[in-house]
Length: 361
Image (tube, rainbow, N blue to C red):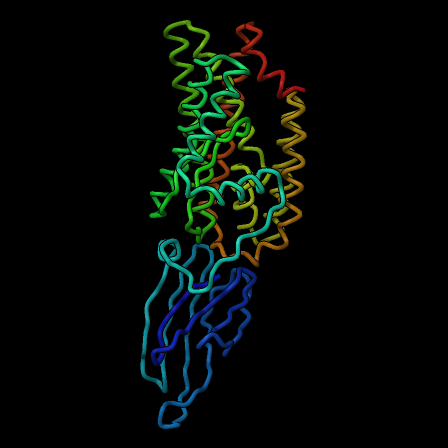
């Protein structure tokens, strides 16, 4: 990932590093220095290379780097023949705001949802596409339930996607709006790329978190009015958001748990992920949520298989504090949705018990 981009003699000087300790320095796009640092060890590293000025005089360029990943902090000093050319420090906020000089190549995920997302990106410039898909979604949900319930369900989906939009805007990203997809939910799109795992976690979880607020509001309306319409909306909205939190890419849950696990450099972190996934599967089957447990197992295996490739990512990893915050936020959100579904299934109404039957199938 790109950590530093300076100008030396009117030419770009770029420092890249990966969490396995490798550092590479480029000048004019050419590799001029490469160093290896011990993982999780903070020490002064000096990149050194020679070049000639316009008068063919030899110049010795040195870039002193003091890099810490947990938490992230970069202190640097650039000199030429002992004269300081640039110095300063960078933190996670600086990485969040930067625009990498090298284009970020998106990972290819040949999944059904991934291909659908690619298809929507091809048509996202046409506003009529949004209207067409919204109309198709309304027709589909009206056919399954009722027109009134379909309108309310679409409102829940829009509120979920609005959570993603708000998170993107919080990080200063430009958004392309919300697209509703029949039977699959919706998409919140942006042309800008994220630079940190924390951005990935916050943007991913804010959709389900807004969905949780909507389910709680519907549940409160049901308690106050006794109207089963609000109860049904709370239950099905909880079910949709719960499936969105499954650790399966490209769902929100997949992005969240991938960012957490990929930020753990030690074997202890990997063991913790395995134990956590196993505990989640056991809890799901213990409470009769067979489908949830099965999908949780599949998603966890997918993430663990990609864990060894974490150092190749351009995203700045989470620090230890952010890892715990992300994990607690994720588990609490999942548990809240399960609690809502479980509570409403206990009313004895057949329709309200359907989400729980789906999870136990």
